[in-house]
Length: 239
Ligand SMILES: [Ca+2]
Image (cartoon, rainbow, N blue to C red; front, side):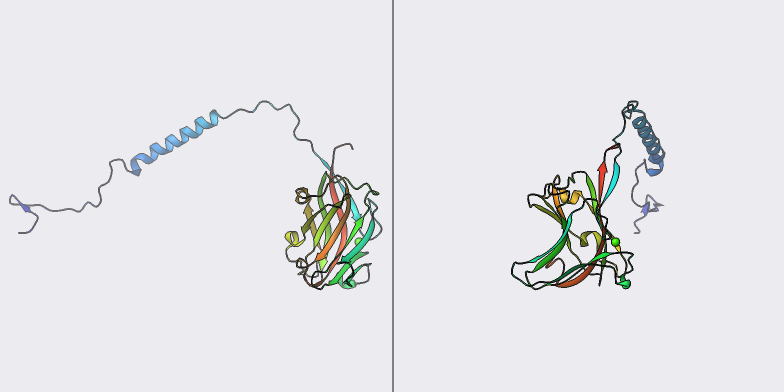
């Protein structure tokens, strides 16, 4: 017998699909929207009201640019250029010269050329020392240290270092900020000064700023050009 026949009547099964709740999304949806709007309205109405502001906002700092060197005679903090290489007693193939001859690098005026060809464990660098006489430069309010950089093949990297009058250093690696240097284009390397703050150097008495070349950071050999080494300092208005 066919399953649908009962009491002489044929019972027709109608597949209604899965049983649905009486309150489907169609019924609840509009109610839900009303509740959400209500909650948002009440939350907005009850939000903490800020008191009328009479206090001045945070003080606006003025900014002052200090040129460490533009290699054309401007050195706002005087200082004396120096270069170094090591370890002691090793002949290091390193050249640090100020020049203005190379028309291929498209620079008005003088710039610094650094060229190196290191052997294992060798290092070298160039810097400007005895800043602010021998008492050091107070860079506690420095915002950034910047310079223009051009790499001969674009893959160069170096350390930018500051050293205090007690000999303690803080340093960062240039590639972190520039990525791969574009070839044939001067790039501004800008180092936020906070990146030096967590390190050992006493920022209240910085004796020198330098560019360090070493393995593995800089690779075995390379050549970079540097110009316009500057600091941006925060100064209080009126000072
Ligand atoms: Ca220059």
